[in-house]
Structure formats: C-alpha cells, structure tokens
Length: 115
Length: 113
Image (tube, rainbow over the protein chains, first blue to last red):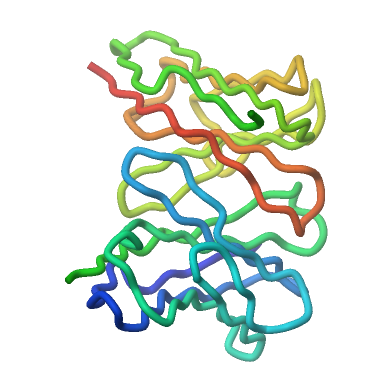
C-alpha cells in the first residue's frame, strides 16, 4: 500500500526567503506525485505533479518540486516566499498501476510566511 | 464554467439522522472520490468510483454510503451509524489514469448538533 509522510506540521519563513516543505513517499514501482494547496475552508488546488523525466518540476505560483528517487522524497520549494503563500500544503501519491486510481495524501504542512 | 460543485457549504445534523451531501461535476470525468478531512489527519478516502453504477470502499467507509447513477453526480450519505461525523468533506474528480491530477470541490462542513 502507498503512503506519504509530511514530517513538519508547520513551517515558518520570512517573506522573501526561500521555502521548503518536505514530503517522503512509499509506493511499489515508479510513483506519480502531486502537491496541492488549501486555503481556509476551501477545497484543494492543484500545484504541480511529477510523472516522469526531469526531476525538477515547475508548477503554479512560482512553486517547484524536486523528485529524489534514492531518498523517496518530493520536496516543495519556492525561491522567494510571499505572505499570500501562507496556507496548508498537501503531498499526495498514486501508484503506477492498480490501486483504483486512488490518491493517498499526507497529513499536511501549515506554511506561515511572515513579514 | 467547468468544475465541481458541492452543496451545501454548511450542514447541521441531529444525532441519529442521515444526511446527504451533494457533489456534481461538469468536467466529464470518469472517476469521483469522497474524502474526509480532520485537523492533523490529512485527507482520508471514504469511497471512490471509476464508472457509473460502480464504486469501491476507501479507507474509512463505515457509516457512509454512496451512489453513482449518473456520471456527473456522486452523492454521499452520512448515516446514523457514523459515530463521529463532524468533519470537512471534500469531493474530487479526475480522468482515469495514474498521471492525472484530481480536481476538488469547495467542501461541505458537517456538524452534529
């Protein structure tokens, strides 16, 4: 069975500084990995995904993520954080085959960007 | 405008009552999902469906039921057997295939009073 771990419940960063939100995964075979963002009392918005190819994936709002197969990680990054980036971030994984197309989510990381 | 619509946004249930949460999509997606969100627990899968008239239990299906009579609709019923139903419920849809992202509705917050 697949699983995702987000080891930090909260990440604090100053505006203008780079940010990293960590994610590690466990799945049989090559994974399909996703990042979503959630603002209070709203649904999840898709940010980016890793399917295959280049290990650095670029997504919406200046976010990017680095896939590292040997460390089974898919950390979300942004070179310069904005206060408006403050939100709850979820990492998710799908197995390459089987599993009924299910997305398995991590527990989420609250990002707080301060002036 | 394409998307997923969940209704109502807020729902209050008395203990012992069944309630139904609506989810409609006009994205022509084959797959639909229901997730439950609780603080600190992330999203947990309740039920999912890949085709009309077929659905599968997720990780926490007890006390819930679904139907998929139309491609566009995937309502979730929270039954009286669900002992702790107060939560934020999210519906999602996607095309079939592991490399496709899911699109989410805005959620329904259910509170037992």
